[in-house]
Image 1: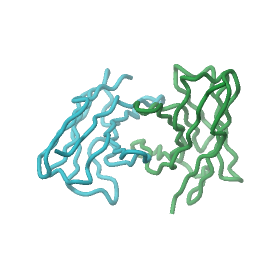
Image 2: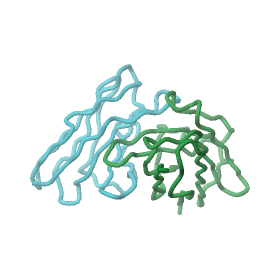
Image 3: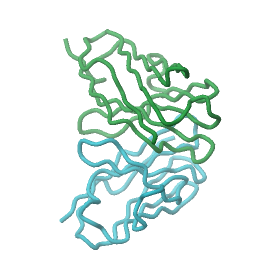
Length: 121
Length: 106
């Protein structure tokens, strides 16, 4: 059974750096064709794709946020870490990680439950 | 690549046929996925690669289209089909979602 769980601070101050961890089980990110993505959703608004890291360590970032984002993986720990610098209140959102299947689709077939991050002083 | 969904919201009765459309700003072949998100929950994959039903998803959901125009159809709306529906393109390495369609049950 594939599961993903997001973790990180619930509250960050403006200008701080946010670090979120996605811990997963049931698959390996060293398997060809696998990836993990981060997606966020501000309250009452649409989903926004943020970043993706592939099994071969290729990384992709949202054009609008690429200067603030960094994604990395620790295959031995089954974790993917997303950092976002210079946080602002508009970054208040629920942040999701999801497994992606790159070789078919691609598509995101299993999602974590999400973690809510509030940016406020 | 920008994704535009229509309508933004709809209200339909149980048993109705419901259609949601998604238009891409450029050709994305069949690299189009559909997700359902119920209130307070994570999105759930319904359809991948435009027309492939994800395992475990009821057969009343179907997807069609290629190029720039895509459709998600619910053949007979059920009470549990409320929520927000999103299309997502995976043609580009930089994935994008539509703005969502809210489905309410009359």
